[in-house]
Image (cartoon, rainbow, N blue to C red; front, side, top):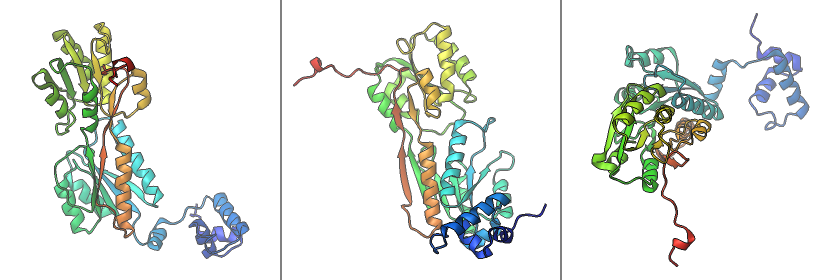
Amino acid sequence: MARVKRSDVAKLAGVAPSTVSLVLNGRGEQVKLSSDTIERVQKAARELNYIPNSTARSLRLGGSRLIGLVLAELPDDPFVPVIHKVLTSAMIEARRSDYFILPLHQQHDLGEADLISALKNVELAGVLCETTSAPDFVSQVMDSQRIPLVWLELIESDQDFKGDGIVRLDETAGVKEILAELDIPQDAKVFFLAGPYQHHHRHLPILAHFEANGSMLRLPDWQAESAYRASLKLLNENPDIKLIWCADDSQASGVFRAARELEIQIPQQLSVIGFGNHVPEEADILGLTTVDWPLETMTKEAVKLLTQTLSGKEPNSESHCQTRAVWRSSAKRTPEPSTSDRTI
């Protein structure tokens, strides 16, 4: 079946092809077309399932409408909340400015070659790049191709990144907020359950706060099952543990399961804290105290920086976001003094 053309819509609506373009580009009222004409064109386009030619549209708008989103190597399960939030947030925000997102992830066996191959096959208007994704190589390639580049710092870093802008993260802000109100003595024994990634900062304030009493256990993945097995072993060997802090919320249900089997009460005997707040509904069910990781806000801000650059505006080249504490029932919190305890 032949593709529906602009002229087919014009014929059905009884107007000139140029009028179809004006209406479907949202300029009908601007050029003072009647509401009847606008409605006829829109109805004809719907009836024919007309989709404007993307190549012609790119030429009219002045170039490619594709934004590359470069991510690090995907986990075994690519549908984890972190990936889902970043992708969907980027797609939604890009469409507000009439752009489309093309995900580009590094593969362990291809890596840099994969990005070069993608650039040979598509024309990119600009690129968003997550900062753990070969930053030196990406900045070199984008600079050589004159492609605008904005960085998205999902994991806090002290590194400088060459490009047109960056959205930076204060990863530890929410962790410090919780520590400031946590009702656990500094000489208590605590464990931080890490995942396979080794370069985040979220554990640093915890280990500094509890000093020699704080320990970190690195797990091979982010799965609840791994956290369950590790927590069961830890709690059996160290019955005096007062806090297990998970590097990601996905591990927390495994800690809860281990505590239940050992008949350890949360938070009376053991506080459990996460990081992410990816799925607040699930965290509410567990009662999980956690740190909100502002992935959606950061991603949308990065897209805005890039689209403003592409439109010729001069946005702020650097934007900052902070994590924040989200208190629920799984951790002991220092109670506020009652009215009678307060001095007047």
